[in-house]
Length: 363
Image (cartoon, rainbow, N blue to C red; front, side, top):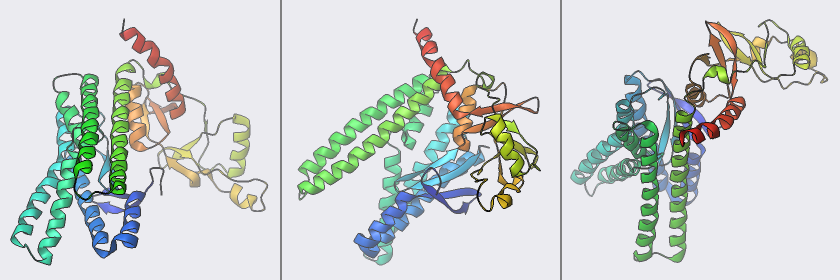
């Protein structure tokens, strides 16, 4: 399991699929409490979420945009797509592709369910109708981080700058949250046969969904502010040279001495024609097998680093770090290594820069 709480389950159309632990939790609950029918419902939900997210990813790939992977959650998913420098119209199409696919599948399943009413076949497609309509309608709500929020932002960007569009979309997200909570409270209060326990349980889930939307909206707004007010910062403003470069043939025993003298934990080497970072250096030189471990060459521990240009905007580097899910990148200048970007250092630079820039913009 990786840092996002998910693990790989295979590939479809060349795209890595990962399953979030919450899906396994639902399957466990379904098996222990709900029985075979509920278990089947969760499996069907999984299949519909896969199709929903593939619609996003395939639309992106057809537009020449890189798709890293898909993480599957119970009521949707996350397609990790490189939306850096993507125009608003393309972003609009990508965001809309998932919900539209779910709605089309829902309507098709509903028609089949009507014609096959009263049969097991019809009941199966009735399940598909409910699941796809749920996914489609829920994700079309105009609130971040749902697809509807991204659709709204992309539409607003046609007539305004990204920050203004994000602000307006975030305000709509907050309105949606309030209406959602009030509507749910009213429905569960006046619904016939709802016990106090069921009311409290349903409202708890609604508040969890509301917190999910609010946190997503805030993160989107923070990102928009960061992009606007760091526009004058470039990669070279945050570059670090606190690293050591070693040859791929360097032995671990030699590297241990280098690290003691350098005072850094960032070790780079050449890796398959690129720059790689040497990781997994948790060895004990005093252990009985230290000679075996320390005699290994560092290239056995190297993984390739993503590269960013020395003159690129710093916001672009931050987006790439998030997309690549890394805390460090190599910086290239004229085809040669100029240094590294480390996420903690970048965050410090931005924290010092933002208050001064935002204060100046208000004058």
